[in-house]
Image 1 (cartoon, helix red, strand yellow):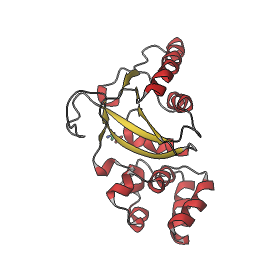
Image 2: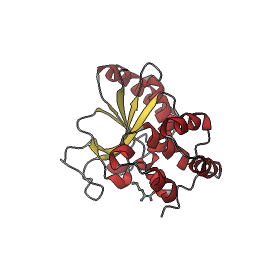
Image 3: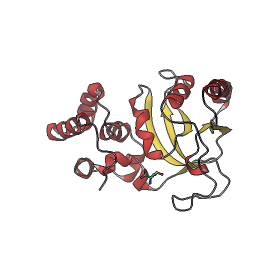
Length: 208
Ligand code: MHO
């Protein structure tokens, strides 16, 4: 299965959770990209933007669909500082072709709103952000998170963490939760907690 990565800046990268709603998304990770400074950190982000890396299966979900989803799930009107600037960072030739889609849709948006700040560039290096930023909303649900016993690597890089992070942010399509339960032997109690929490609307601004 040939998976691809796509990179988007949509303000605070804790919003990575939104991509897990899409079928065909296998993982999300957050990091810094779009600048020239080497080894940025959250406190020393320099000229980089907070970016979500979306790992997806192009036979299920097209890059064009992802770009449309990007436009409809954040506010591209700026100006903001570079850290939170809206951005499309394309990763390969196919996506470069799709760059035209990004630019055309940007022109369309510009007819509707002034000051669209979105920048469109090839990705150079994606610097993975600190562990505490990965799947932020899932980490916030300490009791659920701790009972999963995931390593930091599994948090940054697994379908389980990607989907559960969306439920922690209030996603309520539970059709995939049963499957995850089976695959990962999640207890009834844990699944009920995830379910109830998502139905309550998530708790994203009330962390720790
Ligand atoms: N401090 C802001 C943004 C965090 S994001 C990782 C907030 O609490 O929403 O830049």
